Length: 340
Ligand code: MRU
Image 1: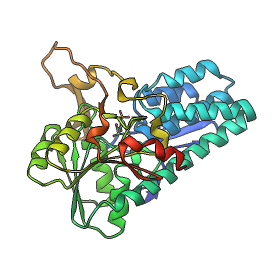
Image 2: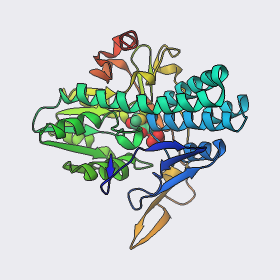
Image 3: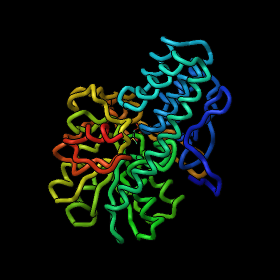
Image 4: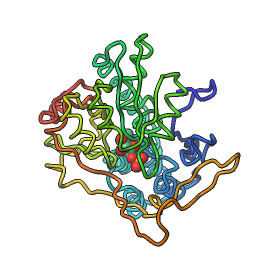
């Protein structure tokens, strides 16, 4: 994807360093973070310098390769895997790089980490092609959080069909909800859509039902952080209520994700671990005041907060899952794995 006319991936490795677009600076600034060691990469994943299922996966794969180059194995793998517990792609990537290293040493680890990133790009591109067929000219799309190219190595999942359809010449409009507390919709999705020249509006988190009820959203597409065998989907907190509302108003609700997000060891969504993040993310917000970034308390002083980062949407609320292998009913999602 292009930023100010220059092509970027969200995360990449060069020699022993991992580079990533620093998402904590967006949309007010643009910068590249260099992780010189696997522990630097772990900090970047935990602090959400890099975030989103596929980008976390690629960064974790690179972190595992860095660890192997540094001569760290078992403990490093545990440290990397403890950074973000919900995103399945993180575990998928560390396992593949670790196993490659067992067979072929550091060179194989780096090679597989690079291959994982390339596979992520290819899958997202194909998700775009499959998903674009669902978007008619004039379509109004609702999305949640950021499952665009910043959340993957390139293209994204939920937004990839939008980018593909836009390039096919279809006129589209996207409703991006804020996605409190980190504001991935308001900050990242809106920024990405602006870079791509796609008409959109940021809506408050609690406004989605309003627009659905008025027939102003034709289709919902969201991403996924982990998909259980029965088609239940863990995604950014707030996804569940959007899915319930979409069903109530007869609006199709799609999830877009590569098959690497499916975790066959989880039989249902109840088996998916949900990350709890710091209450400060709810209590404080960072924003631009004049030309200075400020971090301010936005809640009643002294009140505590709860901050589960994800929720689980049951398969029964999901119309279909768009994968690189095609579109599957959630109940039949494991067929996407056999199609590989
Ligand atoms: O906490 P984040 O920002 O890493 O959350 C992940 C997400 O971006 C979303 O849940 C997204 O919808 C699915 S991952 C592309």
